[in-house]
Image 1 (spheres, rainbow, N blue to C red):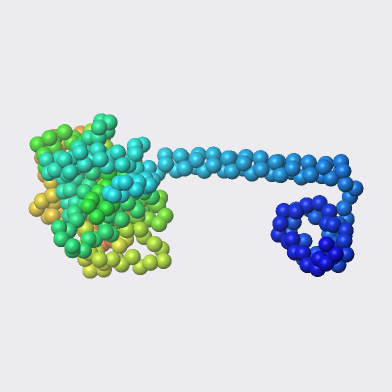
Image 2: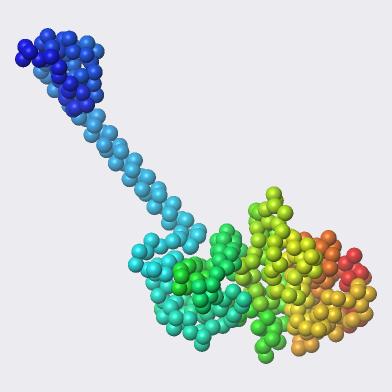
Length: 421
């Protein structure tokens, strides 16, 4: 083609020599840019080698390189897939709250335990008759708790959150607080959260089932005598251990803000677990931690009513009240008089302890005295005078009975408060 003046073959998959003609000799390299392996007379292209066997060898080498690159890529992505699968499996074991991608389930259920979240959601609805009242085992300000036995035989406790009957506003914060707090912490004395469901129709939380229910219900029941002094001291240690973990081993520290006998659950062996973290608060060091008044009357630290400032000492006070309630056997006028009495109170310890039990003896008596001393110190009206939970836990585990305390029969509350100083 002697008349050929322009031929732009850039960005193609051409290879081999460019024709040796005047048009190609004068052509700029841009006309042939971004091709596989062109060569020849065009300025900027590499010279061609002798055609024949050498060219075929070069092409063979290129094919080998391409094949090797493809195999390497496949192996890389295969290893990446295996690694991600292993990491996901480990994450599921560590944190059971993994969302289920379920386009058919409009309830937004999440995976629970080692089961599929969709199946468990259906099981919960069927096992409770769509949350029939006869399956309810407790109720509170934010919801009702139901006993659920899955088809597999697994027992669960499900807290169904109260939703407004009309189009009124719903306070989502307690629900989110519970999820946020319990997915961040794991402790043998903190109730385990297995999963949750959030949808316009239902909002509920799924926990491990605690057979004996709340400490408050056990203390009020006819079987309260089963809670002997050994079990009561053990319950105090369990709660103190959980609070010590929250205050001193979590970063940032967690303040429960509603430690009451209703929020302490007991399993079949009377092991205690702290529950209901709906108003819990993370103590951020760069925050003043001011908040709205929240909690249960009678268990709130007195300074919280006028300072509205959340500190770990608020939980310490509530722990003291719960411990006194456990030792006295009930929350009533007698306990209120103990909390409001001056340090010189002449009440005998034997008159304060739960009258449904015989008096503790020997080492058990020493443990009860140590626990009672700690409770009185924790329930001090002055937050600065209250000990830290880590110190409380260590003291009651070491059974350090205050020096100068006589026999249990002659011991007065004033002896414990004075010895504590």
